[in-house]
Image (cartoon, rainbow, N blue to C red; front, side, top):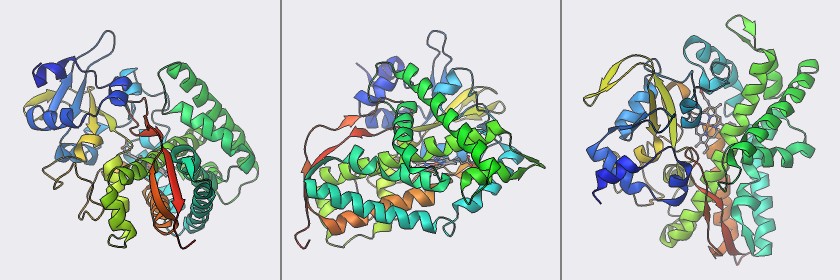
Length: 406
Ligand code: HEM
């Protein structure tokens, strides 16, 4: 079958497609032949635009007036008629209110403010790697990567230790999924549970504020007034869903990439690659958030296609990060790649607030692995996530040994 014909049958909103197929060839074809692709309506679900070139994706991120986030920023909610948290959660806010809310939160995300969280991440990374290296076999996704990002966010929000495992289970079922069965229902139940949990925590912090982000959210003034209870809760939720599974997927995908590219792992362990460069390549290679969704704020033309005000436009980071016009040999893992201007954290006004934290987590695990891991190999099949938004592996069995010097 001809490639473009096949594309017209393909449903890029279908999670099964992303779970079952490597779409690199599809993205390449779209970038070269149909960079502003229209996926037509299917049943009652509206159609949407698909941007795949790096320059177009970056330009759309930069132009928050014409590509708006305030109806939703992922396909599922946009095609479903809009996100219920629109205009309340930071990533779903535009204009002056977005700038004010982001400005108020920024100070909690500065490298200086995060120093304590980063120290605790480093300690946790060493502790977990040492524990599971001693066992010689583990599921890296669950046992190591599954623990760190949520610990970091829980530190930020000062979530009590006793609640953390429960929160992890809820977030994993709310966003990504490992199977098709019961996906939607489980996901909505878990979202509800997370919101309830934060409603309770926020009420306690409003009564007795501490030095954490939940307390900060209850105290800040945005455009002359405090945030409503609902806004506080939704923004806590946004941090959990934005920072947990994404970072976890980057860590798991990074280790999977090292297993598939032993030469790169050898170069890294030999000290030939700086950790900061390896972190950026892991971020480009894994691209945990496959796309971001926007709504056209006005009628506009792009590469000869007419996008109408109100149309859903999707920005595919997964494709932009493999654009051959920007990255030399984009399908090759090169841990020492520089420059590496990937769009994994988006670009412009919604650039990921947790980028410093995510980089610190990935850097801690990579540099600890370099020191602590001797040999490692895959110990079973990895399992891809079932999602059109989050890309990566839900499970990664590894067999490994501590480095000889230990
Ligand atoms: C925004 C990716 C880690 C908090 C974003 C966006 C992307 C992204 C693509 C832009 C969304 C859009 O434009 O619609 C990632 C990836 C991560 C990561 C791939 C890990 C590898 C984190 C962490 C946190 C976090 C650790 C916090 C603890 C946020 C917040 C926003 C955001 C609050 C909204 C910023 C705004 O709208 O102004 N992230 N993120 N992220 N991220 Fe991350």
